[in-house]
Image (cartoon, rainbow, N blue to C red; front, top):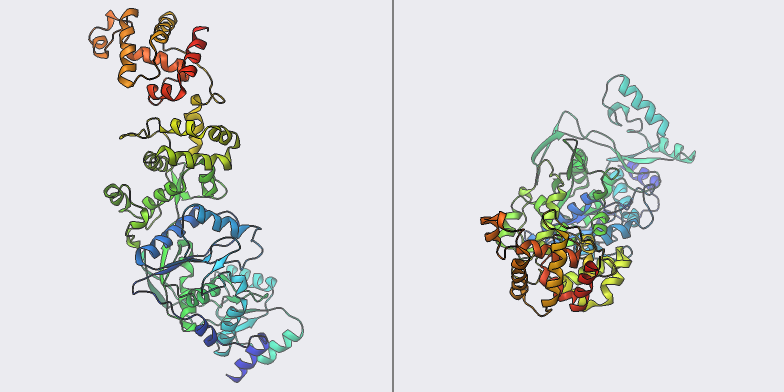
Length: 549
């Protein structure tokens, strides 16, 4: 023990605190029984990934359902991969998608809470304190191996078909003495600090995964690195210290970390910490030529959640779709609770997919349409203008030029008992309603094959003479039906179907002529409402433009 203390003081001379100091500094949380403390802990190496958003949602809804705490922690120990603005990108993305943060990072620069700092690069002294304690207890030691030496060992292991890694007899400095370590340090040799693993690969580690169930794996026997040569910890060690001191009850993360669980369990035990519950989230998959694969940063634009913002998917609709992936019973709940917040859903990890759900953009579009159709015209106006201000400045200027007119446009077929479900994302609005704005309107009068141009023009002349902007839908269509027989068209569709040879078409065909004259399209929302919003002068102008050819 005396030699261990001397070695610890040699390696970490500036560390004068003990683990007890931090145990007292970060006391247990005062939460009701059953409350779960969870986190999302991204690295600031780029944009917010869809998988990170999904994991954050699962953690957030778990905390909400249990009356617990959800916090954000930035794991920035790998400074080589960090990008400028990475923290802002991730936290701003979580905020944009409504992932409410209880403590930790609330923005790129603002962190709050009693268990911080919530950034690993600011916690070096904490990690070094616990490493020093492990050295004193004989569970850690310095390793002076160079990268070249480690590579040479790996090649020998491969040639002899031995499991690669720094373990057993291959752990060169496992039994280094104080004198040997001091001599190498005096020579200026850099070192890392490794765990002195008491494990045996022949033994088994068994744990219950909250999503995947019982998992059995070989015990860790690798002397993996705890502190790198710059004094910054590896993920394995930092995660154990942080989740203990922040009193994380459930570590829920991507299933790529399952292979590391034996290391983490061993660390928690050697440090004398209570083990958290583990739950490993399967990745969101995508079909590629009939085969499943993980969504890829390199191949798939939707891997970055900014894609959904640019496309104009309402953030809450993306979350709504992700909830259908997260919980197999969510859609049944939604049918019974059509207007409730997803946060009211009682989430259960056991309802998550063990193998990983497919990303289905068609379903996302469908989910989004069903949610957008429930919005009022006022809400749509607010959403669309906010989106356009960020992503389509030209359209934004058109929308806000006359807000009351724009709101009336958005009210067409919306503020009614059964609204249309035509819009799934805000970047579709510009084209969908382009005929309502003169800056965007492109006239097009291409008639269906069954309607003669002479009949179409004659109908427009007749309709222009009786048109009244104040007509309701019934009066509006009655005038079309009254004109129909004068041009050889049936007033009623059923008359035409009963005796098609007796008519050129029906009043419905003539309404198509009017639709084309007013909007340039064959399919639109309610035409009478469109004409009422456009106003008499604009309607007459468009009819006249067609009549003049």
